Structures are given as structure tokens and as C-alpha cells.
Length: 216
Image 1 (cartoon, helix red, strand yellow):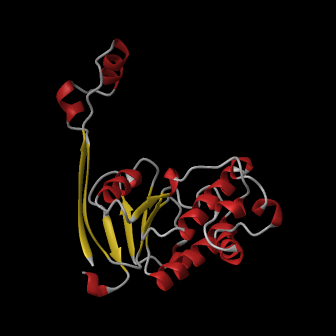
Image 2 (tube, rainbow, N blue to C red):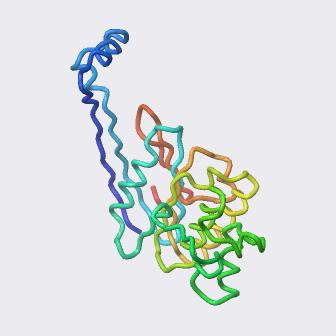
Image 3 (cartoon, helix red, strand yellow):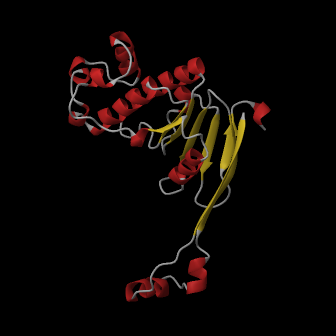
């Protein structure tokens, strides 16, 4: 198990144009008060191999900030961010997945891509939701031990999202790979069964919930 300390601060320092000054006057703000309105993201997490860490909260609360800071603390040769996986346009999905034929089909199926038209299509020709699932399949087929996914299943219908979440839970348990996922949706918790839940708030400290009391 590893302990990660995250600390990131943002301050508001806009150029004081006439429009900015008008907004400040409208809300009764001076330069000093505006500078005090910055955000600070700070928390400590305990994570182990095989964990699913689920970061949730309202849009703009800082989920991506926390994920990026945590990603930066992981060993570069073991981490992978879904958004960094390229979308190919010169070969079919099944040819883009590492492993033999049946292994490739199994991984694509776990990522929710099991129909023939998707499997035989080029990744660049897929819909936004299918591209997300393709990147997930590529991550599952690779050898990285720590997989990061922002906006996890946010573009998918909720039935597909639930199935994929259930599969991710099984994969984490079977392979001891760590998943760090972020989404404003909270309807996937039963299927994901995350080991760590981080709830981001606009004000106040983050809430951290561990499934096992031994983590406290």
C-alpha cells in the first residue's frame, strides 16, 4: 500500500480590464478579496494494487485536478491515461488490440465493443462513446498497472456504463491492476464497488471513504 499526498493551489489573478472591473463592482469585490477566492486541493490517499479509486463530485469541483496530481506521482513506466491513447484510422479495431484473436475479442467485449460492425470498423470512424470504449480496451490489453480514466463512462448509456463498471471491478480483482476513475455520476458505485471514494466539494475538505476499515 502506498500513501499519496496531493496539494495544489490556484489563485485568481485576472487582467483588470474595464469589463473585469465592472464585474468586481457588481459583486462588491476588490483586488484583495478576489485574490482570496483561489482554490486549494489537498488530500491524502492510501492506495494499493487492485484498488479502484473513484473520484466524484459536481462539474468544476476539481476531479480532474486531483486525478492529474495523482497521475504525476505514479511511476511513469506503470501508468496510463485513457485520453493519451491515440485513435487509429488505418486498421480495424480487432487489429489494434494486442494479443491473439480470441484475446482481442475478449478484451473488446469487456469494454463493451462486441458487435461485428464495431470490431471491424476503424477506431477513427467510431462514435464518441465507442472511441472511449476502444481506448479502454487498448488499456486493458496493455501491460500498464495503473489506469486513469477521466469522465469515466460519462458519454455512455447507463446500462452499458454499468456493465463496463462490473467488468472493471472483476479485472481489478483478478489482475491487481489499479484503476483511478473520475466522473460526476454516482450511479455506478454498486457495479464498481470502489475501494476508495473521493468526493470533491467546492468548499471544505474532500471526503474520503475507504471500503475496508483497515485503511483508516
